[in-house]
Image (cartoon, rainbow, N blue to C red; front, side):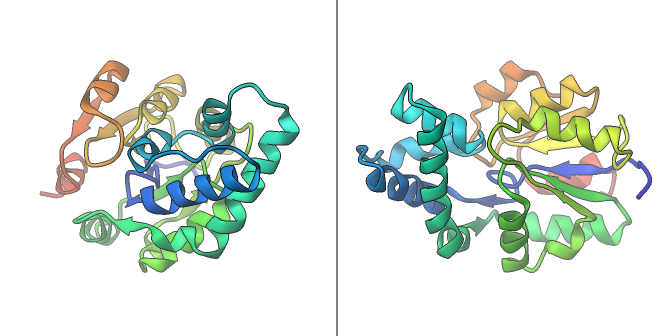
Length: 214
């Protein structure tokens, strides 16, 4: 695949809302490893960042081995049922279809493993809109995922990263890409404005405006 001007989407908080599955899977891991669970209202803050960072912020200083154990416990529930607890954001399916039909190159760059992303996108019958999925893992930052895509020639520097958290915006900026923040996910307006994206969108319909399809 030659480099082209892709629209690269974050998954959690941008395409679908994963808060139920993530929260229940975090608490599954915490219970299995002997830690107190977190409240439902706390989960939103952990949608987006890599799992190892999430668990370190919840349980405090622990060994790398304990983090690996927590992540493994999380994934055993997420693989079983958590991935299916996602909810597609209203308007996303229609926007993706319009973009794809117009020949806009679409990709996904997510902190979760690619296998989980594949299952979620197929759950909503939108996998075929995307030409690639870049998945993450423990110790892999989104800024490094984008750098790898650029180094491999899979996307161009003029490609756009679209996400709901500051980490998405900052990863794009660090790689010289166009950055788009979206306000329908879990990142607040204040968080995104502080990261200073090139564009800030209020609704999925504005993805079409961004791509000049309206």
